[in-house]
Amino acid sequence: MTVYVCSLIAGEPQTIPAGGYHVVRFPFGGESSDGHGMHQAVQPDGGTVASWKTDDRSGLIWPAVSGWGSLTAVVQWEAGDYSELRDQFVRDPLGLTDDPVNTTATEHRPPSPGMQCWHKSHEMFVHPGVPLALRISHNDSEPRRMVFAEFKLAIHPTEEGA
Image (cartoon, rainbow, N blue to C red; front, side, top):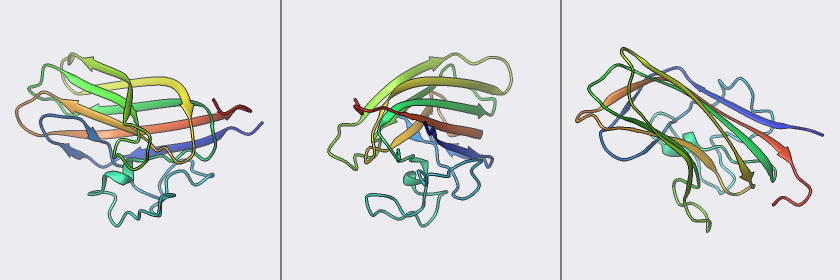
């Protein structure tokens, strides 16, 4: 049975404003794996991303098939004056479909000394037409830089598609 994989890497820092969750954006074409076209500038709903650096659509993975999705993320933050870092996986974070925005695996983390590095994983059913994203936040009073991120999806197709 084929496992459908999309692996995104953002090696360029992104400034994350204070307050609220923000979609992590990923460049196109530099992925370690996107053989099934789940992260493309021209997206399944007809939207087109002109600049990955400014368009939240560049953070979307559009599942190629229905199945059991294993999501993984790595995020590294610069040191800052925050007392909490937050992260979550989300279905349809931009409200592009009839599915309601649905967050899962939300975590709030206290910082450790120095640079902040973390990894998370979660599993859930995924479906074509309902994009997924990684969102992050911090509670500092000024913008902070996320210096590196990875977002990965592996889909194990299911017969019933749950």
